[in-house]
Amino acid sequence: MRFNKNVQDILNKQVNAEFWSANLYLSMSSYFAQKGYAGFANWMRVQYQEEMSHALKIFDYIISRGGEAKVEPIAAVESNWKNIQAVFDSTYEHECKVTDMIHNCYEVALKERDHATANMLQWFIDEQAEEEEAALAIIDQLKLVGDNGAAIYMLDKELATRVFVDATKTA
Ligand code: FEO
Image (cartoon, rainbow, N blue to C red; front, side, top):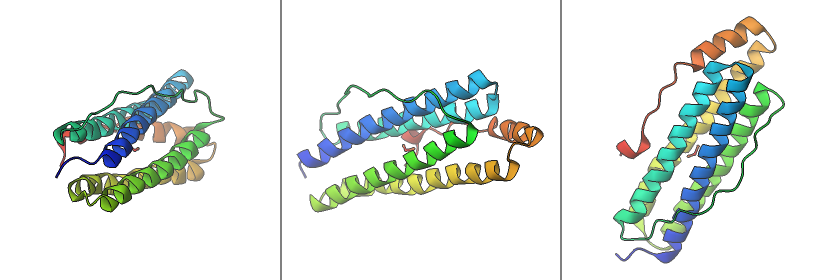
């Protein structure tokens, strides 16, 4: 089946959104590094790497279908937040938006009867549920620890252990 133009267009928008997400998390990583939270900074740097791999996973898919994968300008991201909690609130809100975008891609694929793309997007639908859950879990922990410095220190140590899993290497 010839690669559908509407599907190609919405997937290219998603590639751009994933690159934007990568920059957002890299900016959050910088914010945490400046404040001395090395573990939070690591968690966000891994998040950045994951978003890059999401972008490339879709990018590679477009190419595999004989389409044109586009490298478009990426809009600026924020660089300052009120506190740790605000960073993770933004993360959760952002991931909910990305989930909507992925669902929209999926609906366009089905409308155009492009079942191969719908199938590829299934991975992202599952991934989004995990991303929302991960952000919510940290928000819950932050609520529990409040402004207890020792507990924040422990959480920072825990988030230092997160490692990158390359989405382009998983089916
Ligand atoms: Fe690639 Fe966090 O969505």
